[in-house]
Length: 213
Image 1: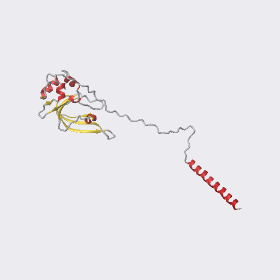
Image 2: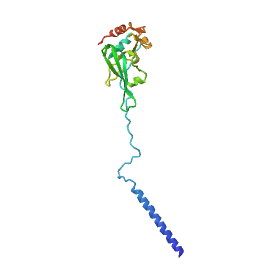
Image 3: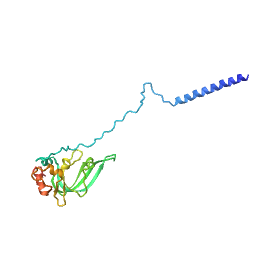
Image 4: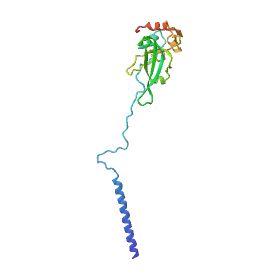
């Protein structure tokens, strides 16, 4: 009699455990979302197309100018702005993200002008920030003669042929020719083989090629 009771209790226990397991499976299935028969399940999210930003804006092509008797004529002819003056302010315009400067602003007090500027003018130009980052920098108070490309669609400009379009000036207003200038412009009848040039001679060398303003 006792054995029959134990067998009955064992059967009831197994039935209870089985019912609990089945009920637990029903609760899990309630949390599994159902999909329509034709629905597509994505294993991975769709790729996001990266935003492509230009490495640098389209600037005038700075073709190298070799040493010959027309090198200075090429520099003068390519320039839209030619003037002498000193730097009064330097600033940087940031891109919207604020991670890097988009352009450098340079403000000059124009002292003498040959093309595209006027004496006494406060002239502000915008250069692509990459030029500043690459080492083509200015300092407040620095006196220079610049041959600048005409500003492009973005309003950016730069010296013609890089360093060839930029000349330093001393406190007396004389143009100081660096090694690259003397090597490239050595055949010029006015500028050749001279390291310090009075402004009047330099301006005369520029005006030989016309298009003055």
